[in-house]
Image (cartoon, rainbow, N blue to C red; front, side, top):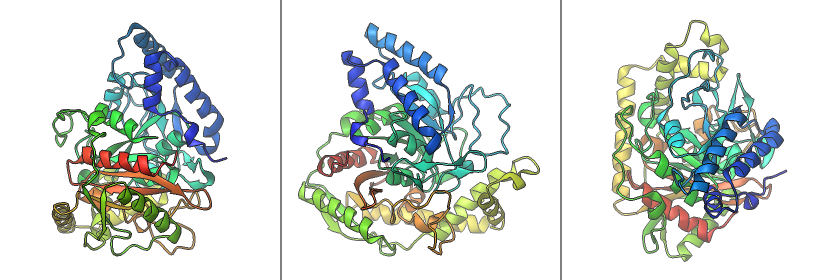
Length: 461
C-alpha cells in the first residue's frame, strides 16, 4: 500500500507540537518505532535500529521541553542517519561484508555529532549499497531496499534507506550522502524532499575517497524541515579542511525569502537526455505553475555536453583508491558491480584523473556564467520513474550502469552546486516524480527559497 504522505507529521509540525505540549518526543519516537516495526520488514530501510537508546533520548528531550529549555529547534524529533556516517557505539559497515563490525566505534562524524548536540532522537542507521557506490540501494550484506510507494520498485540510491524511511513515516528526518545524486535520486523516486548543498557546507569526516564529488544532505517531507535541519548540519568542523565558514543568519529565515520576479531557466532535457514522456509532462506542468506564480521561467539549456565519461573517471578512481586499502580477499566478498568499478578505476592514470578534473572545473565555469543570466536552473530530477527493485539499471534498457539513467544529477556534483529534488506529482501508476532546482555555488538559501515556492504552488502532500 502506498504511503499517505499527507497524513505524516513533518519535523516542523512535531517541534511546534512539542512546544505547545500537544505531543511529546516520547510519543513521536514511539510512533516512529512502531512504523519501523510495521513496515521495515518489507522496505528494508534500516540496517540498525536502537529502540532503547532512542527512547532514552526521547525521555531526556521531553524533560527539556517540559522545563522550557530545548537545546535546538529540532530537539526530540526522530531522525536517522545513513550507514556511511561514523557513530559512537554503532558499527558503520557501509553495506559491506569486508568491514569488521567488532572493531571499536568511538568517533562521531560531524553529521552525527551535530544531531546529538541539537537534541534530535537518533533511531538508527539506514541502508546503503556497498560503499554508496551506485544509484540503487542493495548490497550483499543487507539485501534490497524497496520503495514505499510500490515495494516491487527500487527506492533509488545510494541514500535509498533514508528516503524510504522518511516516506514511510519511520522518522521525520534523515541525512544521506550524495556523490552523484545519491540524495536526490531516492528523494525523487520516494516522493520526498532531498537537498544537496554546496560542497563543504556540511562537513564530512573521514574525508570521502570520492573527494570533490562528495556531499552530505538532509532528507525530509517539507522544505521548512530541510531548512531547520540544514541549520543544524551546516556548522564548520575542523576535521574537514573543505568545510565552509558559519553562515550569517539562518536557513529557517532565508527559506521564506520572496523569489517572485527572479529569473529561472527550465531545461527539460539538458539538450541530450531522453526523458519518459509522462515524467516530462508532470515536470512541465509544475514549471508552468511556477511561472504563473511569478518566478519568470525561460526554456533554455545550459549548453554543455554530457560529462559522464569524466565523472566516471573521478568516481571509479575514488572507489579504487578506497578499495585498495581493504583487507586481502575482499574482492570476492564485494558487490560484483563494485568489484568491476574497482578494477576499472585501477586502469586510469594520473593524467586521466587530472584531465577529468579539468573537465569538472570547466563545467563549473560554464555553469557560473550561465547563472550570471539565470538565478536558478530547473530540470527533472530523474528522466524515469522508479524501476524494478534489485536491478542496477531498468530491465531491457540496454544501459550499462547507473550514470546512464541519472543524467540530471551527477553534473552538479562535479560543479559542487546546491541542488534540491522536489516532489511535483505522480505517474498514472502512482510513482512519484521529482523536479530539480540548481543554484550557483553558495546560493543554498536561494535554492531553498525557490523550492518553498514550488511547494506552495505544486502541492503534492
